[in-house]
Length: 80
Image (cartoon, rainbow, N blue to C red; front, side):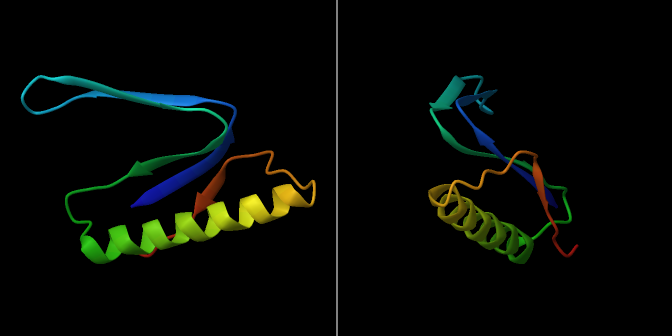
């Protein structure tokens, strides 16, 4: 499992559910996270990535307050 975290001015995602119903979500300024997971990724991997992303988002918010910006996507290392 891998996650890429990116500060964004705006982001959106759209998908089609199993029943064929289309969905979409949008955010303004914030943090967008792209997560890639495989069939072998279990709950422990999901929780590890969620914790790493939450920690990175908190750190990004704290550094933004001191005028430091993340200028490149950040790859969150995880154990497989």
